Length: 362
Ligand SMILES: NC(=O)c1ccc[n+]([C@@H]2O[C@H](COP(=O)([O-])OP(=O)(O)OC[C@H]3O[C@@H](n4cnc5c(N)ncnc54)[C@H](O)[C@@H]3O)[C@@H](O)[C@H]2O)c1
Image (cartoon, rainbow, N blue to C red; front, top):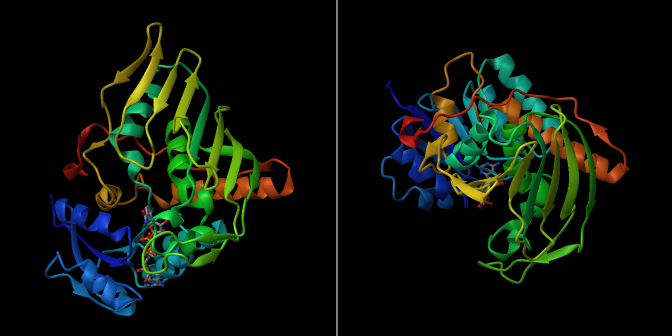
């Protein structure tokens, strides 16, 4: 293996604590600098990692050591930071969604093309053994031709645990744009791109109350739909039924099921890297051992996979996939608001499968 890729992180909030240990562990990545609007937060976040510089955003983007900017800001800031990173000639890997709107995401991809730099985006959970083993089962014909899938995410809302949950209830958030990227990316990985959608959506209340941290008890405004349902018509003809909710309280539905002509699959939570894959057969359901994907993975494995993707090749957790996923979600909301089916004009390739290997080999 050659030299590690130098990573500069912008945004040191809740999720950064999951990335830093992965970057520390994986031989292909090296954390060199961090920045946040709140420099104290950045300083605290890297206390366990001596030698990492705490810089201003402008300093980090101008730092010649930084090869790739890991953008862990809130969705409303994703485009601004990504475009600045691209203008500075850096590759950029964003947390999901790629931007708050598909229009902004398209601007990012265009700017990156023009600057000849690369764009990657979470979620990388679908590169773990859960979704990848399910994908291999489908590709190996275990359930025959896929006909349909269901994807269900029902929770009372992240304001119960996140100390600054405002971004979940403004455009760029909501259950669809926040959690949908895991589910839609998994569905595209399993069944291919989406050609059209039909949606319906609702919201139960205009205010939410923060449940933890220094702002506990504070009310925040809700300006997005908080229960979104719909059908994704894949280009293959398969139909995925989606339910994404911050309004329900609990569910026992599988996160994802895929139904084929010969059998069905239970696919584990696409917000996690691993989990049991079940396949139906004449004797009932049986567990499939992990047969594909990055083992013992954690957030940041997709960044290592991105960093090691050969030049000229679209990374698995790449911008084209993230843009298509965002476009599908926006189309679903548009359909929900207009009451008519919406064609999805973007498309993407199914990312190449990941053969079973340790995440250190990403
Ligand atoms: N919290 C989670 O469990 C979780 C899980 C998966 C993905 N994500 C995604 O990660 C991203 C960040 O979420 P989070 O929970 O860490 O949010 P957060 O609010 O805890 O942290 C975001 C950080 O970004 C900083 N920031 C915002 N705008 C900035 C700017 N323009 N320049 C520099 N810094 C800026 C903020 O000061 C803050 O420290 C979101 O896209 C979210 O969807 C979060």
